[in-house]
Image (tube, rainbow, N blue to C red; front, top):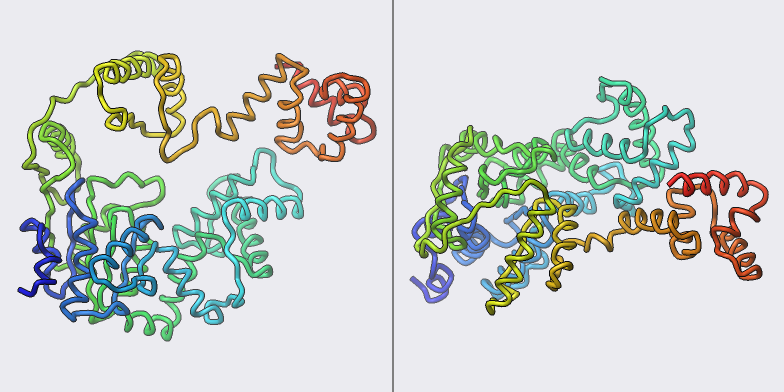
Length: 464
């Protein structure tokens, strides 16, 4: 074994080594939580290149986040000593974007096509609703945005959209209008990236041959989170001589609400991997007591490929489970426990509070503040700093204090009431001259079209 190969493979356990050095064939790597799947995936790529089994141009690696793609490139550069910038490593949508940039004409797009972000897409939908008129009561732009994106994620164009509800009887034809406007303006949305390339792979033989012939090794991270459109994309790209190395864990599939289909793993195992499943079961992250609890729960799941996590680490402290009648009491208990740990000399950096959704941070933040425990929010905005929360608080502030000009300015045109900045500045001038709050100046001295709108706003605030 050469020194470089020895360095590349050193530290891998038996199953990790088996996965990394697998012969050229398709396989499912069933990687449990904390089993080193990212290391296996990147080492597999480096090993293929080092062994001369593939060049960097022959490899396609798919991740689910830009952060993961960036991390993978950095690891590969460190492993191989070669720049990874030109390698085909990215998210499904990022790789589709690259394909469209290489083939805009074949895709029916202008070379300078632009991609709308979520806000741009929503603005376009609002413009179309205004242009079309006759919008049914209760139909909102955000609903139409969700409908359009969901249809595209399912691979359904407007011409095939079937209305099955009163809302869809409006949304389906609106989807067609939206598609026409996007084509006219030379713009596409995020969901269009995946759909457009999938359609081209199915209908354009030259396009299909170009990429099928290019990639001999396709590696996919978080395979359990693929939806049917993404699975079809992978199936199309896998040419006769290509192999797919799919890493995932059906026990960690939590994105069914985003159309993820964990049964794709079982389908892949039989359709492409010829039953080749390598299980990474040694956990490097958790203590034995945590793994025992996790295994006891997970084994009750139906329709799983099956594995049993274990660790060579200690059992660790036993898990404690506490139940509370309300989120407030739960948060207060957690905050008091954290405070006790800090008093006992525990390093604050070794303490973490995990919650499922960002909205749940509110009760914990209040409790931690009440106990004078400093904290940092990671991966989100502090609850009281979020735009929607600030807006709600501004309504409440103005309702109890008409002199709060900051609250007035924040919400006078949110949601939009047709009261622009120029009108607000006119109110501000009156307020300054008469030394009265903005709210009072606007309520008593508005004229023209602004008068009716202000009266409605005053009535709203008064009702609060």
